[in-house]
Image (spheres, one colour):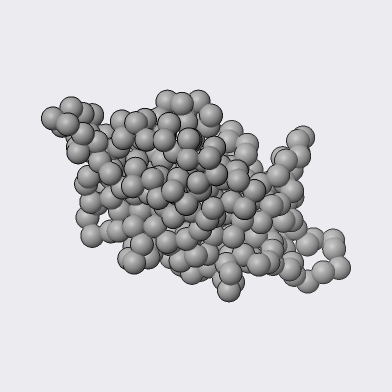
Length: 281
């Protein structure tokens, strides 16, 4: 295990511990022993492969934890990343662990969930609700901006503010749905990329490379997204800081008023309502 600087973040290579524990977790779930399953999952995610006999996986541990540590340093060097890291609740712990090949096949992505997740009442495997400590499943090939995105989720969980609201979205040709938490994390990720003068992507759903003008036009045409921006600006401290602090070319929190005005052009309304509730305030 490796703690990152003075932040409540622990990098923990536990891939082989996960693989050994998975059959037991599945058996407990199938037997409807959900609390025992949760406790085993907590133990697995907070245990290191370094505890396995003869430290068999030392090379893998050093490589993974060293690489992720370097990525976190890159995140910290960016003003947006430094802000996100600094806002995570110091009373919580963020565990960053590797994602197995099997999990990666199910979703070629990073994922953040509460460590002590709420047990679903329907007996499903869903682990997305809860608060406090979190677990980020992350592979270094997913890059530092993806890690920043997941740290935004971890921040929201750390203060029990994770409240996903489903929104209808449209890219001009195709309709889809997206939740407000992914939207917020994507906006912070895009500001982070813009701050570093790196290529931007249109949206969490449609990840094609786009410039600021194209993305702003996309936001203007998606009223629910603008309502989400407004809700976060009113209730989310991180969004308020973003609006007044970062010099990035792309910053829809700073530029919200002009985006709202463009959306309301030729309409009778003076302002948009916020998408609510967003922050549990």
